Amino acid sequence: MKPDKKLIRKYIFDHFFEFATAPPLEEVMQRFGLTRKEAFAIFRGLEEDHQIVLVPGTQRILMANPFSAVSTPFRVHINGTRYFANCAWDTIALHVMLEKEALVESFCHHCAESIEIRLVGSEVKSSKPSTPLIYLSMPVAKWYDNLINTCSNNMVYFSSREHLTHWLAENPRLRGEALTVEKMSEVCKPLAKGRMDLDYQRPAKGELMAYWDSIGMKSNFWNF
Image (cartoon, rainbow, N blue to C red):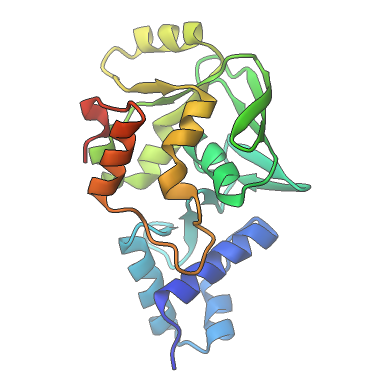
């Protein structure tokens, strides 16, 4: 019997957790006895389900959110392993997903100041600077128009409210949501928690919107 998508998805996430990088298609072919056509069809199906993102025009995995297969400005250190996340959101989602103490390293999007945040149990235990913010400039309804653009350019850190204000003055057309790190951990929980599990399923749109509304995220920004 050929493996189903959820088994391949679990293998991809386990590979990222162990090696901090994506398994190549050929490794999945070997591991599960698949032809290239069969393995790629599963990859495409997982991409359609928003479980992974492929490098455009290739059969290679770029993202298995919150993991990134390439170097990014968003690094998360857990138990001696350095992982790359796709965006500021995913640095927190990685911690929530793995439920392990994490050191997040990133940069202010305005001035490139280094940011370091130590997280334990979704709470900030230390932070340099003291009050960084995560800014989301792409409304939820547009996230999957181009997820690479959304993650790479529209979910970033700022070292302070002042630096965010300066950046918005330089980019007046962008309007989004600014979140504290701990609020981000609350917001991302339905999508991140349990994501390593074999039977993980993404929450339905209505379920997500109801949850976000219940924690105070009530603006149109959060509407699908």
